[in-house]
Length: 459
Image 1 (cartoon, rainbow, N blue to C red):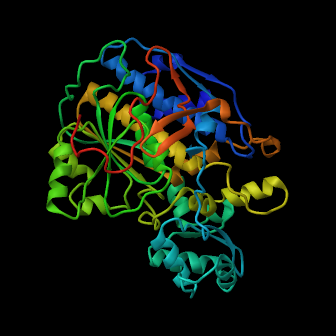
Image 2 (image 1 turned 90 degrees about the horizontal axis):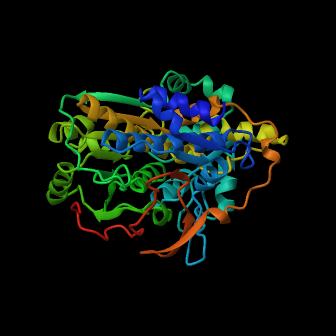
Image 3 (image 1 turned 45 degrees about the horizontal axis):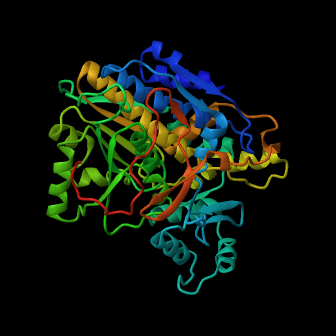
């Protein structure tokens, strides 16, 4: 499937106007990075969908339609998530993260957060204060892959067994994911169309819209960053007691950033005040986490009728893994991508995809879903719930087909797509946005700032 057809399918699934598709200008195609999967199609079509939906919302607000151009190589380069601070690109992986041999296969462990790393080492019978990677590798060889995966899940850790596509398809979770659509847009309450701020012809299409971004790990922050690129006021809401990944320097471009402690009454009241002025609420906390605090989709829609609530999960809302934590690297491993990429390379050694494309594409699907739901809200009223997951995106990526000879291409130079600007983290070098809006160029006038740099209030 090429990117034009993939975009058409996304657009149709969101029930958006067919006339707008004529504004999409897609160039290039796979292979763009060394992979047997259509990662260029995945990047290009989801970014184009997000930008085109934002522009169509601008059209509903009175702007003429405009051309939206996305090049496959630029889109894929953006989805690498590459960035550097003061000329240094950080190492994004913990020493203990990665693939381990077991007695009967392989397990991938995600150890970037201290509590996940320490929990995994204790499960292996090791002391986190003294253990080495070699110690962990030796200890893992005494485990069966599925046994370690299950034991880790019981302890709310993050590790998955390596599977083939056939093995994944045979699992209850594989069948549950296959039965779900890529994303859902659901009306969850009655409300009149929200009165949106007036929009000038030279303003970006989401100017004046307010987005609460309660996400931390890559997919959600990428979605919020895209909405900011199209003009929305995006307020990143972090907890002062939860860790972040280094990529926050890149994904916070264009956003305001505040701290709100939902363990306190003052923090809960502050978030409700923000909700009352928001148009979009995005969250990627563990399933049920925010609902337990009273901020589930129905709660938020009751307090702010007409809002669009976007939920991100790892493994969808159905099946025995619905409540499991997960990250892109683990979902790739569990669903069969690493196994299939190794087979395509001819050496049967498991290989990760050349970028965290499940995170990146899911992030742009979040932005697309938010803009599409806002379009429906303006036309039909109601409050709306958008749901996406990394595993559903993975199932969709698999359905895009394979790229013969894709692993033989060289990794391209992304330097032509990189801009360097000042930020609250230092001089930030990162890939500029790949969607080019003809009349109102996308971009991030607000610099990336550390968590808690701004007040918990709307500008």
